[in-house]
Image 1: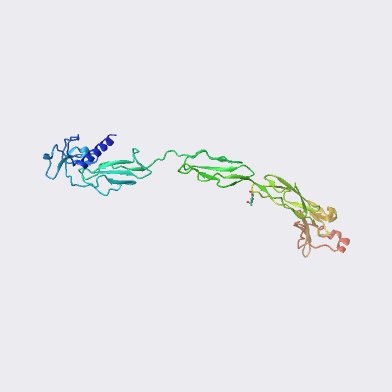
Image 2: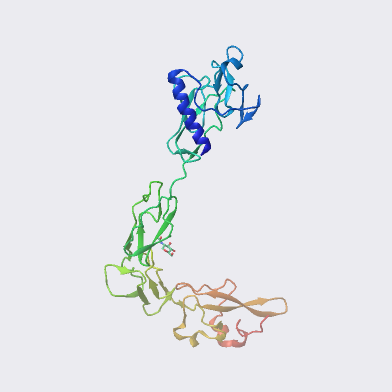
Length: 347
Ligand SMILES: *[C@@H]1O[C@H](CO)[C@@H](O)[C@H](O)[C@H]1NC(C)=O
């Protein structure tokens, strides 16, 4: 406050000086000591009248230093650069006693919130201190209006002040169209228009080969709706028979109807579901898709022969026989049943 008072006093004085060329008469602090520093100002020799000063110096009011012997011709630094401010000489001169007006650029303010102040050229050839500082304006708490409420969706976030963001979400079965995140801008408006949520549908589910679709015929299906598939007789469903419409409008999967496999051996036993059986003992002589069957193979040496098993899996109608498997002939089967590969000692 005191500083301001002085500045405004200085300014008024300086205007008076500028117009009339100084005549010292206004109150000016009187100082005793000869050379002191006041507020960073180097004071000149104190005086009470021009008679106290050397020639070419006059007894003038030098700001806080009070009446001092100053040289009116001495100048202060010019041009003067102050960050984020415009500096302008009020009288076009920058010599003792002259005043410069400092105006902060838009968006900047001085420490006490003012945008303009005046500095004066002192007897020590310095501009009066402290030099003003223009700081970026601390913006008022700018907030955006409450975010738009959207149908079939909602937003998350509770801070709507500038620079903050909120997120939009759609209810299950709805897809977001537009911007899922919105930002409160510096001018207090939202950056994007609110998004919308539109309902997601699945297209009619696909038909499958060798099977049936169990579903109500409709042009479109809602998310989470389910349809079922069945396979024709003699076919096995690969994958779950229940298919669901997903949130992105696609079906969870498409099951496949796989063929069963004919067991390709006649005259030896094999292992199927932990039982050693003849083909006649298996219904229709077929196994299901993905079922495994172990066939017997023979291992022969100079003085021994034994059997070992090799596993095979039914896949969509094909149950491959292992390379080592040899189908016994009809004669072997009829005459030497104990010597069939599946009946000899295991290795
Ligand atoms: C749909 O969603 C599922 C599961 O989230 C995903 O596996 C699939 O790739 C998506 N499909 C498309 C077309 O985005």
